[in-house]
Image (cartoon, rainbow, N blue to C red; front, side, top):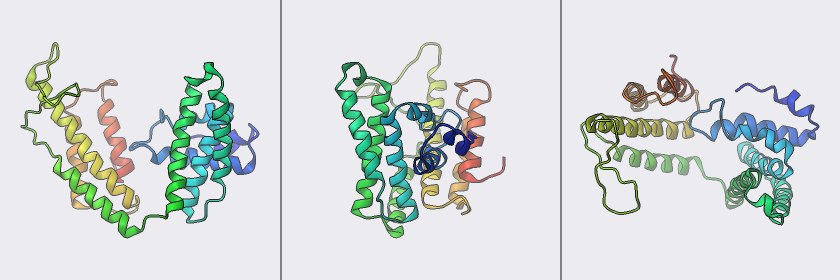
Length: 250
């Protein structure tokens, strides 16, 4: 999503520092917050609300300031100011019953939670590269262990009960449903492999043979899942994923 951020924000009168951190939020945080960035990115769509509502604005700036400090390996001396301002605005909203269940209040709470976690992790110390690689390797092993063979017959439960029964739908044969469920689960598994790999390795790092295989398999499986958003939607999304995380020319 292309936004002329400097012009758009400066015309709305944000101070220079606020404008800088909001650009970081829109261009960097919103982009990496989702496995696949797209025009309907919910984090980026908070911008109009943030520019109207001080609670959301300061919460978003707190997230951006804290993340920027970690990103640049500098001491976080700014985010607490935004956190205090957002918390004060949120407390004021809680004092008015008509605001308690509003989207503004919910968005503020979610952003404040993210900001507080970033601040706490910065305070407790940054994770080393070795620790990050170790955690990523452990996670990759867990992802590998969830593989489902295409001939599997999964049992799906839609309740919190421990038992699982075959899931049935009206107008769809059991074999077609089984095929779609397995393909969808495997698409998510392969996508998770690639996403974790890209957390540790930047886009300039070539994919390993295993990651290349996951990309190819995920793209093949996309043809087995119906296009929920219209003809070609799944293949378009898959190609977008390949371009962004596989750095592969489609």
